[in-house]
Structures are given as structure tokens and as C-alpha cells.
Length: 279
Image 1 (cartoon, rainbow, N blue to C red):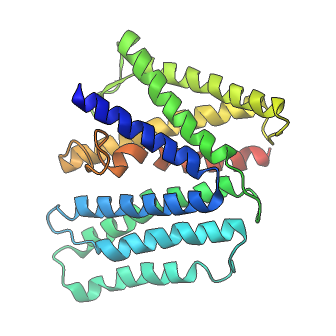
Image 2 (cartoon, rainbow, N blue to C red):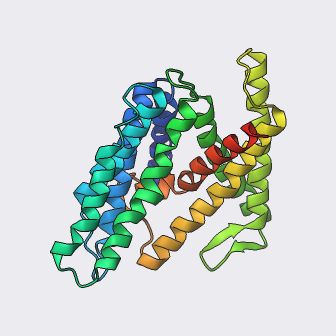
């Protein structure tokens, strides 16, 4: 009972912090730069416990945060887009060259584990800026917030339907608790929420570039890739032999535990939106 109360309180504050941050572009950039840094720091700490792995935790974290901020500056039109990514590229080159002098037993391991959080964590989070700043100088919270709403609704629907109807395991090797019934229930709920968002935007005359079916497609895209994101992190934890990625969020585990679904859902949403814009 005590753990349930702690988990509920943490969850309320977690959701409130994300929702409130999206109401202001500076708050959004600050919060998710912090989230990016904490998540990469957590990941590097986990892999550094493996044999023959020695990732530079500090520089990897700084590089990931810088990529997020550089993308924010680029998408918002706030900085010179011709040079903003150069420091990041220099840092990545440094992390590769540094292995020549560290005399590690397995430098390939270090290279792989150093580049993975940049691709798996920093790049997906940086894509939030593409959703939030559809045009330079223009900010909208609708799309990035909708992605998180879809993820939360998918978790809720999957839990309820899985608990009541779950019979067929979705991916028992990686996550025995997930069922096809739960995933389908979560997907149907998200489609309904996506259509509701479209309707609310129409009613408030905040016309979206997406029609009703495109909103439903966005919701399904987030569901599918969010589920894969959850499974990818489950596989990561099974490989590392851990239950939670950390304990920074009482009752909810670590940063990877809370943002695992979004790490694939965010870039998938960006690809989906670019794809339908070309149709």
C-alpha cells in the first residue's frame, strides 16, 4: 500500500511537470535537456559495470545535452544553424580518438557503448524540438504533448485490458507481462484519444495540419513504436541483469524506465509526420 501511494504521488508530479513544461518553450527545453542528461548519465553508469567497458560518463552526458540544445536552437531559429553542431561533432570525434591512448582491453566495446546513448537517447530526445518548433520562431505544444498523452493512454489501456482479458503473450522472452489483448486495447484507446484531440482542436478553431485519420495514424504510430521502445529497454535490462534502470523516481525506477517508450515513439512520430507531408 505504501509503495502504491509513493508511486501515485511520483506519477502525478511526473505527468504535471511534463504537461506544464510544454506550455512554455524555454521550460520545455530546460526540462528535456535535464532529462536527456540524467538518462545518458544513468545509461553510462549501468554499462560501465560490465566487464571491459569504460565509457566517459561526463563527456558523453555533456555531448548528449549539447545535441539536444543545439537542435532546439536550430529548430527554433534562435542560433546560427551553420555552426551550432560543430562542437558536438568535435566531441564525438574526440571520444573515438581517445581510445587510442586509454589502452583499454576492448576498445570496440568502449566505442560501441559510447555511441549507443547518443543514438538511443540524445538523438530521439532532440527530435522533440522538431515537433515543438514546426517552423523557425514558431512554437506549438500540441504535437509533442500529444505524443506523451498517447504513450500514457496506451499504458493505461494496455494495463486495464491486459489485466481483464490478457491471455496471449506479446513477447514472453523479453516481457512476460505484456499481452496482445492489452496492446490492442491500448491502441484502440489511443485512437479514440487522437480523434478527440482532433475534435477539440477543431472546436477551439486551432486548426491542425492533420485531418482526423492522420491524427489516428499518428496515435497508432506512437503505440507501435512506444511498445517496441518498452520492449527494447526490457531487453536491455535483461541483458544487464537488473530489474530497474535506477531509483531516481520513487516507485517508478530510473529515467530509462520512465522514458523508454518515448525513445522510439518520438523519432517515429517525426518520420510519420514528414511522410504524410510528402503525400
